[in-house]
Amino acid sequence: MSRKPNGAIIGIGELKPVRYSEGKTTLSLIAEAVRLALKDAEISKDEVDGLLVGPQVGETPQHVPATVSEYLGIDPTMSNVVDLGGATGPGMIWRAAVAVEAGMCDTVVCVLANKNEKGETLRSPNRNPIREFDVPFGASGANTSYALLKRQHMEEYGSKQEDFARIAYWARKNAQLNPNAIFYGKPAELEDILASPIISDPLHLLEIVMPVAGGTAVVVTSEEKAKRSRRKPVYLKGAGEKITHRAVSQAPELDKLPFNYCIPRALTQAGIEVKDIDLFSLYDCYTSVVAVTLESAGLCNPGEFGEFVKNHSFSHDGDYPLNTHGGQLGFGQADLAGGMSHVIEAVLQLRGEAGDRQIPAAKQALVTGNGATLSETTALVLGGEQ
Image 1: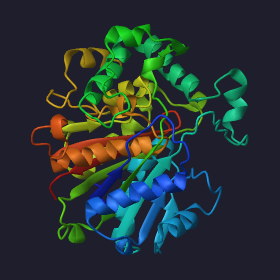
Image 2: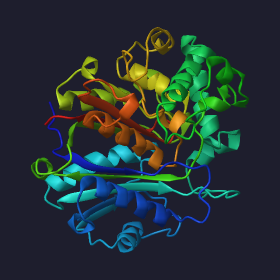
Image 3: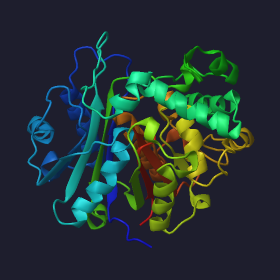
C-alpha cells in the first residue's frame, strides 16, 4: 500500500454563487473567499506561507501566484498554479499536504474563483492538438465532448435517457436543502429534465451545469498543527490522480477511464473500501460524468449505473448520500471553483455542520474532480478522525 499524504483541512470559505458578477474582478472574489476561509480557521493571513491558485485569473495572463500573493498581502514560501480543469480543487488538497510534509511551508491556502460578466465571451488560445482531430469535426466544446461520452455509454450498454436524468433530479432535490445553491427553491422533476431542450444530442439542458460567479478557498496544514486548531480538522486519508488523454477522440474505453485508477488508489491509501464511505461528493459537470464515476468507484458494474440510481436514495438520509449540497448541477459551477465545492461540502459534513442536510455520523467522504473530458481526474478520501 502506498503511503498517504499527511495533512488536514482546518478552514473553508465559499461565496454564494450568483448568475452574474457585475463590477467584480477575479482577484476580489479570490480575496473574499480567502478571507472567509481564514476566518473559519481562526487564523490570520500572516500564518499563511503557502499558496495554490488556478490558472484562470482574468487580471493577469502570467505570474499568477505572484499577482495573487501581492493582492492578498502574503509572502508564501511555496506557491504554484494547479491546472487540472475540474480536478483542480481536489488536486490542490493533496499537493498542499505534500508541500507541508516536505517542509516547504506550514499552512497553505488553496483558492479558486471565477467572475461571470453579462455578455462576456471567454475564448481559448488556438494552439492545442485537440484542434487537429476534434474541433474540425465539430467537437469544439464541453457540451459536444460530454454528449459523445453519454452517447457512447448508451450505445455500448443500452443506458436510457431517464437513467441519466435521475442524476440531475437528485442534484436539484438535494439543492433544496442548501440555501446557497443557485437552484434553491427550484426543484426539477424527472419529467422536467427529460423535457428540457436538447443542447448537444443526447444531452438535455438540465443535465448541464449552469456557469455562475463565485469562489472557494481551503486552508491545509500539518496534522500536528491541526490538533491545536480551534476548529475540528478534516484529515486527508488518501489521494489518487490520473491523466489519460486531453481530446475526447483519444479517450480510452469506458471501463479504463482515469477514475478507474485514482478512486481505488485513494481508497487503498486510506485503508478502506467503498462500502465504508458515508458521503460521495462526486464531480458532476454533466450527468454522464456521475454515471461513469459511480461505475469506476465499484458501486455498480460497468453499464449498470441506471439500475443503481433507480434503486437507491442519494439524499443526506439515503443509503448513498451523493452531492448533498446539490452538486454543481444544483449548486452552480463557478468555473474551476465548482470542483472545490465538493471539497467544501465534504468538510461541512465531516464537521457535522451541514445543517438540515447533515448526514448522521458522517466519518469518511470520497471527493472527485474531473478536468477536460474525463481526462484529468483526482480522488480524495477525507476523514473526520485522524
